[in-house]
Amino acid sequence: MAKYKKYNYSQMIMIPVSLQDQLMPGTLEHAIHEVIEKKVDLSIFDEKYKNDETGAPAHDPKLLLKVVLLAFSRSIIGSRKIERACQENITFMALSCGMAPDHSTLAHFISAMKDEIIHIFRDVLLYCEELNLLGGTHFSLDGCKLPSNASKQWSGTFKELRHKQKKLEEKVKKLISDHEREDKQEGGSDRSKKEKQIKRIERRIKRIDKFLNENKPKKGKTKKELQSNVTDNHSAKMPTAHGVIQGYNAQALVDNKHQIIVHAEAMGNGQDADNLSPMVDRAKENMKAIGRDENYFKDKILTADANYHSKKNIEKCEKERIDAYIPDTLHRKRDERFKEQDRFKDGVNKPPKKRWYTPKRETFSWKEFQYVEEVGKYKCPAGKYLKQMSLKHKSRNKYYRYYQARETDCRECSLKSKCLSKTDSKSRSLLIPIGYRNDNERILSISQRMQQKIDSDKGKDIYSKRLGTIEPVFGNIRFIKKLDRFSFRGKSKVNIQWMLYCMVHNIEKIMNYGFTV
Ligand code: SF4
Image (cartoon, rainbow, N blue to C red; front, side, top):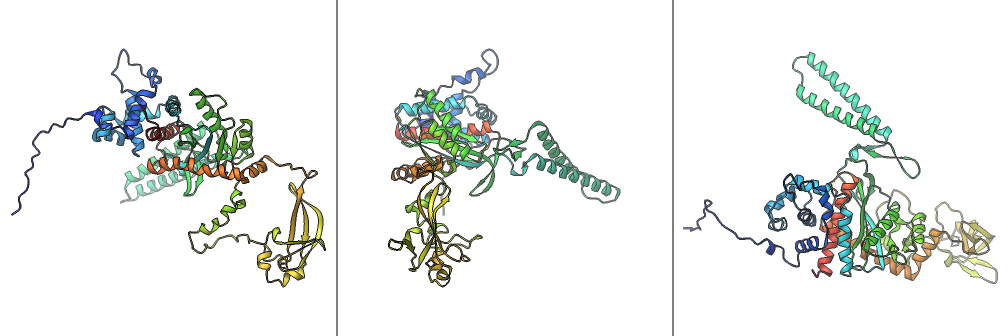
């Protein structure tokens, strides 16, 4: 016969808990506790509280900040979930000293630190600098587009939103007339359900109406109207690899020694190219605030991917005397190391998928044609001579010598599939570069100068370090900390959330590489 241990719920158990012992050195909670307690000045919050003479004492901002940072590091985002963690999880209980702040206190604390967040971020950055975690030689810039608490369906130009409003009004009219008709008949459908539906649509109409009256159309760089959003007008509709999202472009500028983020900002703008200049300017302000030179980025290396390649950005870097490496979109096509990258486009060792367009055929380059000095002509791989058509053919910034094969030679040629770029081409033409325009002087555009810089061995070497500098930062925040969407609405609140995540990342680096407190 079985014999079990007796259990009794009607008894008391006393468990002594030392809060200090829960914050074990070497853990992130300990690092957050030490950094916020000893290195971050939160007296900036003092003037927000007017309860010195009357009113109950408020929760200490240090305590709230520690709890929020730990929650974000464990991918606990909602304020109700954080409140629950403070009541049930011993680490959160220790960090909050058993005070268990409620969800509205936590939500208000996060969303109201619009002016304070940058000072807190700089205090953590200053500590990174004191611990010598900043290399100060090479920085990388990148961004990731994340959805926010805004509805894609409520996006549109003012004309589109008015059209939407009109359609909703028509729908209400139809529902009311249906309602009246059914009223006259006996045994009509449920009245209250229809009334609720009408009220819901009327609320939407009012919301659109209020938005259209209080806002102005957003204009893009080309003066074309951009889509506005009724739920969060600071957010933007952005295409990503996983479809179109309504959200923010979270930017980070990272030092390559230990991947410390020197500036982070959420932008309501899907175009990375527009974000380089503000990111560099604000990173300079951060460095100045922690006591470094105003021209901190002078002669420092900055790498950014092809999305940042624009004349304006390269000019900005030249003006700031930053040694920038920002490739154009075709740099991999020119790089021998990526010659075979298309092999992996549709999966390793798999036949390429059918495309909706006809890819351009790979044809013999001009280097595969042999120049025969005796006759002064080029000979093609099939052994036929090409006739010289022009001595100085001008195209863009270069001069070429122009040759053409005879139609009769190419028509019967067995190599024409490898030689002619289009199936309906009649003969092969050949452009031999002979120099640059304006008396062979190299008048290179700013973009071409950047191309040369990137294509050089030094450029390739420096640019190859970008991936290992910036991508682990986004990997950590997006996949380890699981920030896959912003839970706030409005640029300032989303920015606070993004900076808090970046701060957790920096504190983690302090814990791993420089903790001495
Ligand atoms: S297609 Fe014309 S140019 Fe090309 S290899 Fe054949 S004959 Fe020569």
